Length: 340
Ligand code: HPA
Ligand code: ZN
Image (cartoon, rainbow, N blue to C red):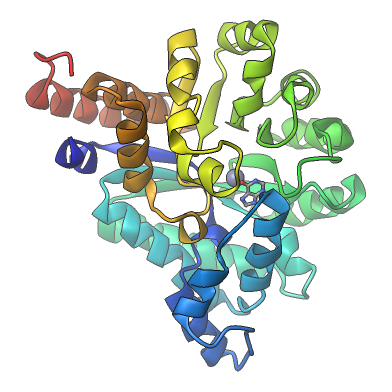
């Protein structure tokens, strides 16, 4: 099963580039930029990665991002992640980035996006990996601030596919960003948002009804409301679920209690993702492997998850079909005749 998962062609749809910042690279870039970080070793950083909730994690996550200063830093960060995609048979990835985390510190929008885009281009030409960008607004900041970011993004509009919403969920409902999402949609961005990670099902309702999102990041708490589940299915909206993240941030007590199988059984379109792999103990394949073990999922389930990852990507139809055909061939070859 492990080999089957490792070789399975797949896409990642929920990934924060700042959350891929491995301690080794953090030290390297901190030294290069002569920036002090409050840790003496890689081990000390890793030991600090014990979280009791989302906010606990976000405090450390923003601290780590502080060392990123130059276009080269953003290139190195992004290319390092894309190399890992290549090693894991991740064919396509939809990368979130948080411009405000950097512009708030005086780093120009242009520095951030140019570094990321150069890495995307190199990964496409050297590794054959496709990717697109989701520009996420920080929900603990104001809607006015999000509007400024939206405006800044316009020069790079052809590099960005979606707008997203992340950071501290409780107390910052989707409705706070109603106007900026309406404007972003008018401009041609596809709307997605984190909802139902720590916030309850009302937040998921707001995200689908008010922000009109096309994909839900996390969405675990949608299960609190059966009408909502039916509505999500009716509108054919997928959930980007992140098992190791949910376990690390105590969204679930442990992986055995994770609702992913229940979601599949209800008919929800679920995908598996790593969220912030440097912080939560594993890349994408580890998420597939650990959730498979915890819930005793079948090969067919793993195939369904990978299929959803391509199906609910925002790729053009031609490329989507190309990946789906590759996946189908792999599945037929490796286990279509057995049910497990
Ligand atoms: N939730 C909210 N904001 C985030 C996350 C997350 O899981 N990761 C990075 N920013
Ligand atoms: Zn996330």
